Image (cartoon, rainbow, N blue to C red; front, side, top):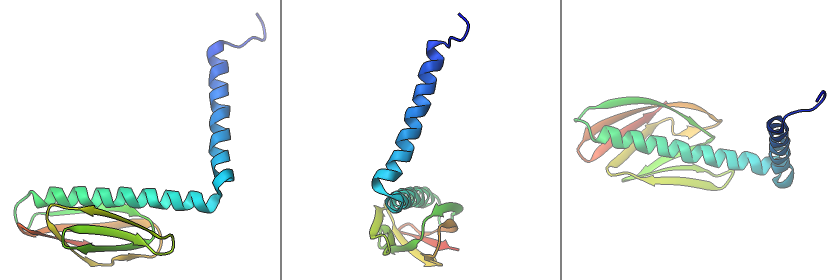
Length: 135
């Protein structure tokens, strides 16, 4: 019985080895640049989703309801067109958009030069308009 390991421990070790092979292999197969692009697009999608969620929450409140949110974003540019919010990155050629139930007006520092956490002040102006100020 000496020197033997349990079946559970063997399975755990094999699972860790498979995980390491897959995580290292993904970068090797697609290249580091592609992995960075996919990560940036994923972060952009979550940023737009969080922005939309908070805009919808503020739009349900009274006029002058204000909410300050911190959103981690990759490099890119925020914009809005009536009730559509858009985050674009021309270097990586992607654009993520979301449709809100109210019109959105964006101002402030809309261009993000490097990935960072932005501060967005979301304020309900009237029943049909929410203003987002990014700093």
